[in-house]
Length: 147
Image (cartoon, rainbow, N blue to C red; front, side, top):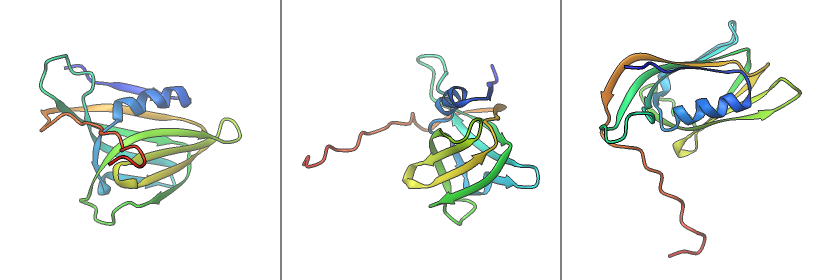
């Protein structure tokens, strides 16, 4: 069992980490901002997109953290710490180099914005792997005016 370990030090790296975390599930209670440490931490159950072809779909427990976080803001996050979120993407909006904002977008419209001194993020599988109930699918939105 190969454990994934990635580091993101720029916007391009963050795009790669985002691809590995697409469709990761997490509870609202598994999101922690530590302002005194300037750290933002997530515990996720990521979908294993790199599983061998033909293998049953699976998920892995993973941890991720952003360093050098100046501020964290959210919109649309459920107040219930047991509410489940599905991470769609992590993007980076540059500010005055090397700073900027990392945007975590979730299904249902919830968003977290992290103001960063610079991009410094790490993702690590923590070991447990289990068979997923299904493979995530993305149904495109209907064209405007389509019946």
